Image 1 (cartoon, rainbow, N blue to C red):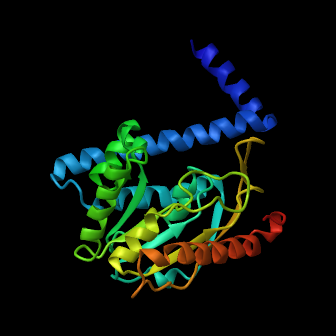
Image 2 (image 1 turned 45 degrees about the vertical axis):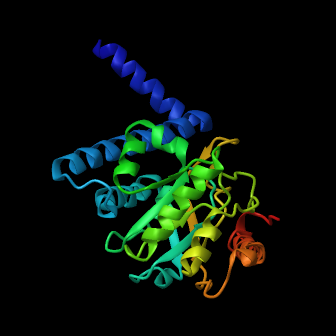
Length: 267
């Protein structure tokens, strides 16, 4: 038995050193394993303290995921973080490239403030990870039921001022691995306009040089995170949403292109 274990270990080390594909799946597998462990500990802690639906429950997850970047050799250079370091309600828009975006979000997420994230409803059924997000006051929108999605967004609007929430949203609605950004969905803008709270656009530079699912690349490197100045929604109505959405997306695409120039020009 020991001999089999040693042979498997030697083969795994050789494959890790020589195969990009094996190395990619090994690293991503570790990421999923760590997420599961963190989620399990978070759920157990919430049950022990009897404090469900509190954003403060994210504290352990924030600390743990923040350390994970050192394992992968990912360095984050963050600009404009001061726009988020206050107790004011905000809607924070972030471009979405991978499930690994969580590592970058931990650079911005501060347990001292009430932060939550909006995700698709299917995430709630992703085992212990979905349960942990739900118990930490995550928001899940049902994109296949418009009436229910509107009801869920209205619930966020009702709480955003009373809890001074910072609501993190991926406005593209899904991961974009092809560079630049997909068209934005209106949900986050409806929340911001109805709440009359500022929007802070946040741009992660391209992962292409250090991470690619298609090319099976997963290596160390630097990512630039740029928090743009808050965009006021005071006095705006739902009729202003298309222009607001277009303007913010243009500024985020420009920032993405500028900060990602080292890995080639995009859109």
